[in-house]
Structures are given as structure tokens and as C-alpha cells.
Length: 335
Image 1 (cartoon, rainbow, N blue to C red):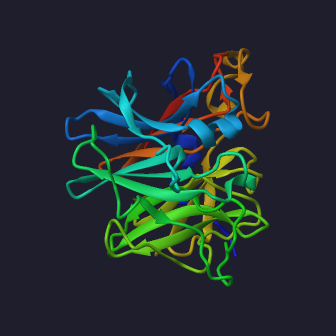
Image 2 (image 1 turned 90 degrees about the horizontal axis):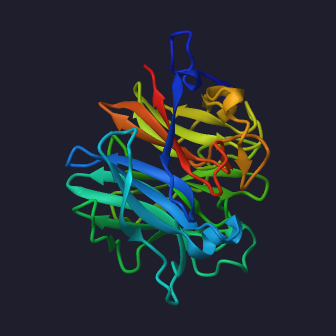
């Protein structure tokens, strides 16, 4: 059973604490999507960004041509400049031939990790049932990036028909990663039980796996959610996800919290729609490139500092200032 819950004793909610700053990454000629941040050893902020040529339709453009590009800035609010492509499709007869997409970057010890999704056919499967989760590692944020294990793939849908996402029509995708304080590596992911997209969990003893999926979901939702970001805060394991169909607010975000990181039954508003943060007078030129009419953020990724949320990076199907392709935005957390 879901329980309305808040991590905050103050009157100001988690969702109300975000303040819109502006555009984080604008890459002319590219559709920009998932933007994952991390502080580097150099003190700079590094973003790993999914992007593909803007002349392609968003779908299946993200499946066929997405690559993960590296941008660097002097501070969380930028400005960010392009550095290099970190991960792209193999172009060969492999699970990751196409569409390296939706990165999540982390540091474990002295090793940097990028988790991502990819596929072997960008047009055939419905909803991307061939999506898989991969991992690359490096000692430097500038690479080179090495595939984990034999071929980089660390999670595929289960072969056991009793598992909740057996033969999921969207495969396994959109990874969220947590080095659990009690030990082990938790890999959260989106998949489907045939009725709705939910968050699942696979756990490993070692960074590169093997990752063993649990047979049940970790979120208990009847309406689809996706795009989780995992972090520890106030002694809880938290997942920040989209709210695609209005569990609380259609197009907003959800903040799930859990004592153990295995059952997320507490949920509250994680962030609002764009028009809550940006005055309507500044949205007159907004252009929709993808998705519903509602001005919503997608694929939220959090920059943590001193154990607290500091900034939120998120793309949108709308360019709120009227540009001819999508960009990613940055919001600041006001404690």
C-alpha cells in the first residue's frame, strides 16, 4: 500500500525547494536528453548527456542514433562546453549496436562508472523490448571507457516466467545506481508488468556484477513511472522518478523513500511541472518537440553535495524559450 509521506518537517515541500536556473546544455543540431552530473577530481562539474541529430524524429532517433557526450563546466550552473563522445553504439552485431542512451554516472572508490541503455534493433520491437542495461568504467572522466565484463551488458530481462517483468515489452532500461550503505551495489531499473511501468531492482556484490534481479517490483504503482535517480538522504534510500500519468500530478515528479531500498511504499511530490517554476510570461515562445502538451521534465538526475541534493538536471520535450531542438535544464535545491 502506498503511503503519503514527507521527508521534511518544514512547511516547504521537497518539490517546492527546486528553483529554476536555466539551460544546462544546448547543443545546436542535436536533440538533448538525459543529463547525468558528477563532480570531478578537478573540482569541475561533468555532465554525461544523451544526444542525437536533431533532424531525426525523436522516436526512433534515440534508439538508432543516440550517443553519450561529455560536457564540462566550472560550476553546477555552467557554462558547459563539449569535450568528447564517451559512449556510442558498437555498430556491430552486438546487444549494444545502437542507441547508447540515458546515462547515469557515479564514482565507486577510484573508478568512474557510466550505466546506460542500448539495443540491437532500433525499429522492430514494440516499446524497445530489446533494451538492455550496460556499464563502462574508467579511472578518468575523460576516458578511455572500458566495457564491464565480456561485452558491457549487466542486465537483461529475466528468463523466469514467474518474475514480474518476464518478456517485458520495454525490456529493462533507464538505470539508477546506489552503493548501499549496508553493502552491495543496487541497480534500479524501469520495466513493465504488462499493465504499467514500474521500478525493479538487481543487486550485486561486486561493481561489475553479476547483478541478480529480484522477482518483485520495488515501487507499488498502478500508473506508469520511469527515469529513477537513486540517492541516500535523511537516512532513507530515495528514488526520484517521473509521474507520467498523475499518481500525484500528471507530468510532475515523485520522491519515493524506503528504509531498506527494497520496498518503496512512501511517496510524495518530487518536483512540479515546468510552469510551476517558470512564470507563464516567459513561456509564450515554448515549442513542443516531443511528448504531451504538459510542460514536464524528463529523466531527472541529481547532483549531490555533502550528502544533500544540490542541483537537478532534466531535459524536456519542450524548448521553453522557442529553440528548434530540445535542451536540458538545471534547477537548484534550496535547503
